[in-house]
Image (cartoon, rainbow, N blue to C red; front, side):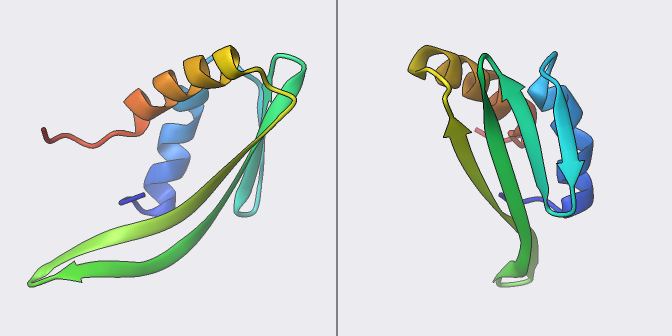
Length: 87
């Protein structure tokens, strides 16, 4: 993701909505239905394109015991809250 860890942590509460979550260093667990989403992130070196520098955060999503419909609904909301402007 093209964001800093600080930005990611600001987005996270709104992105998970009403779902309960717990933060740890570089990780979070989000309760979904009878299962959970396990998030892990790691700061990466910035992407440099000419004079532009984009922050990078490697994020992994692991859904455990979450149905396909619930997963898609959650990710649709999550994506909307973590997208940057553009077209």
